[in-house]
Image (cartoon, rainbow, N blue to C red):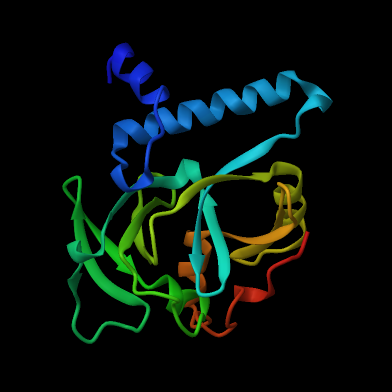
Length: 202
């Protein structure tokens, strides 16, 4: 992306529904700059973890923005017959075959508030991609980094309940997609209902 294109992207709001790898790079650069500004400000600003927030049933969940690679239409999924309940099928993304998973089944949520419309393509590390379904296009948010680190130090759950900042206190389930899939492979997926694994409240 050229410097002029980057400047144009910074000058306007970027809907996640139109997210492309280039625009995602701009978002992540902006998030990194924001973190650097907060660190330079010391006590004047609390460090925050940029996240993509989305509803699942009556709860709010999030994944780190740095791990989100794209938001694509659910219709891109090709179903797999006789697959486990948490496996929707697969899709082709940037010349890769990517497994698509049911986030509702993985979390043990009993029902969506509305039909899923999109897939979140998530990088679990080292370029290993997976897609999870979502009721709607996520929005960009931020969680206090100190709360995230405290929750991670006290639990190995794939979903951690984090008290989000802002005008009102609310709980957001921070999802580690890789750990959630590993739990499903071990046979423990979808057993918790709502918040998975008894996530820590911070």
